[in-house]
Amino acid sequence: MIKQVALFLIALFSFSAHYAQPEDNQTNEMLDGIIAVVAGDIILKSELEAKLQGFSQSGERIKPNTKCLLFEDVLFNKLLIDQAKKDSIEVGEDQVNQEIERRLDFYVQQIGSVEKLERFYGKSVVQIKEEFKDLIRDQLIVQRMQQELSQGVKVTPRDVREFYHSIPKDSLPFINAEVEAAHIVIKPKISQEEKEKVITKLRGFRERILDGEDFGTLAYLYSDDEGSASRNGELGFMRRGQLVPEFAEAAFTLEPGQVSPVVETEFGFHIIQLVERQGQKANFKHILLKPSVSGVQLNKAKERLDSLRNEIKNNPDLTFSDMAEKYSDDEQSKYNDGKMVNPQTGATRFEMDQLSEIDPGLVYALDKLEPGKISEPVLYVKRDNTKAYRIVKLLEVVEPHRANLKDDYQRIRAVAKARKEKDELDRWIREKIESTYIKIHDDYRDCEFQHTWF
Image (cartoon, rainbow, N blue to C red; front, side, top):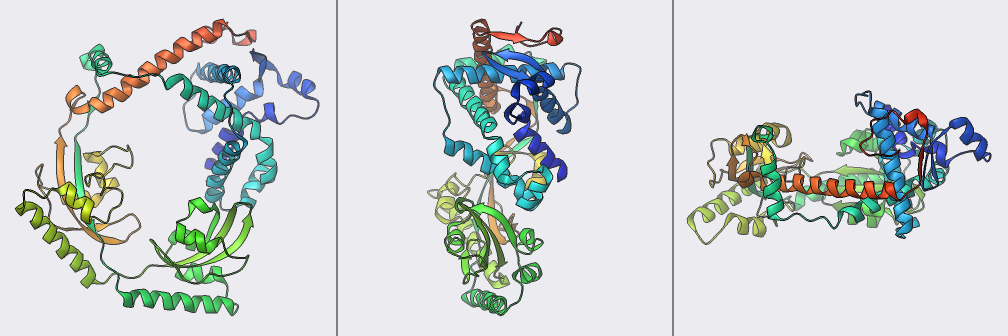
């Protein structure tokens, strides 16, 4: 965890010497060392050293030319910033603040608290935000400028074909076996009796807390949210938009120390306590209880899926995709013809050797199925460990093969577009270097840059 936070601080604040110098800037720059000037903007030796340190701590192997390539990346960013100034491309204060908040929020959650992050960095969060605002602004401007340069790049089917045929046959990548599948999920109904049982239990917890018991102790002992239970129910600082609406609506009306009534969300039932508020963010504790699913209700979900499966098989006018949209309880797939999305790639294909890690139950469901066939109802244990049933349709099996236009068009198109964007960016860099004042210290004259900077 400490290594992760260290990498974050290096990534977020790597060029701090340039943005957070003492009042005697000129003295500091002389001691530090100016190694380049691009369009009047200086690059300090400390910037490059910090970038190299971050690269090293990320686990990447440092090669003889690594420092030079990282230096070239800094030079390139300066060119983009200069062009953004000429094109009047700016980012708003709100966007800068949101990006700082987003990065800090993530690592506050990882390290445990704002206080721990402040101790680790040696400064208050307010100081951190203010000190590195200019750096984050430059990073966002660089991203915007890169988008501007690449947004006009288009690839036609002809471009894709030409790119594909330009690759030597023995250099085409080997694609592992893949499958594409769709499913219809039915969640078991929770009985009103079970809901009332959970609500009553949470109301009892609330009364005990109001009578003086510690919220965190009860959360540690009884909450079904394993992640926060280990932290005495504490969620960490979050904005309203990071929480499901029902939770946020109840939580953000609380005063510090106040405990909410029972709140129902898609995750179950909660009671919430406000710990502290900071502007638009607040830190909460909660106790989550999930109603138990009875075997009877699970069996009813299975029977419902069995009925749907028979309807699809016996009625040619009913398609699996239509029935998924109409009946499936899986919001992520029901409007995508029931197709499951690979969380590692964002595509609808899964490599066979990935399945046991991503969705072990899917391996079982697809076993012995032929393309176009639908499985019997099988138990589906979701990522939050809740149980449901599903039927799965095997849509396609792609055997191991060399990449080709028929089976891998979208993949090849993406690579072709990336190549075309790079060519366009290289052309822009060459022209920009010609028209921009650039001065680089002689110590770096032996660097093997990708472009001619001297």
